[in-house]
Image (cartoon, rainbow, N blue to C red; front, side, top):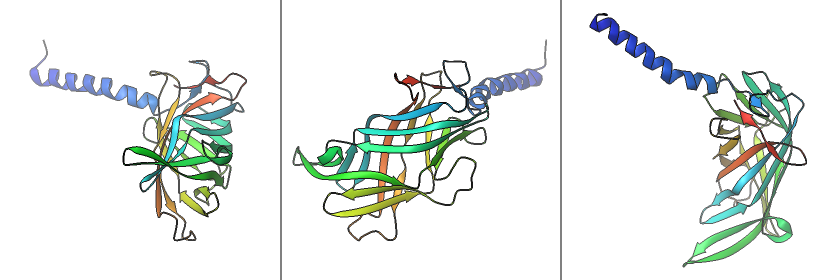
Length: 226
């Protein structure tokens, strides 16, 4: 029979072991397909939105129902995942399949300008490593493994009006692990307007999107963070 103090110590140690184990596991990311099988480097991947990618412009919502990013898996060691992103597309319900502004006004939806959303400075690098918080990632404007010199920049071309550029040093987000299903990425970056923008552009552009990470194949097949 153990003394009260030593029993208490054993209980605390057991509690820490149980609560810390899942965090440590998810802080060492590895991409798998199918579940349990490490995905080979060189595999082509795509990141596709779930629902609508939304950018908030004061009372307007700029909505892009389709967002599509493609890249190649360059690192998958069990302590680091890196994907070099080489293409980026956004489209919507506006003219020429551009994204479109909408806002609620007096109980009805008012349709605004069509906006062509593109990028500046690909490739970008998606990274998730054991040195980051568990289940988190970032995206920076550089080749994977190179020093970052530029910001991630999105370019908003308002049909017949103006061009506005918004940037951020890195897009940060979180991912789901195989315990809850395939890899779902969630991002809520607030982009800052470039100093060279017109006074008609907003000073910042909050955004929100959820995307799924898949193999870039004839049939989109989800991959998993294990």
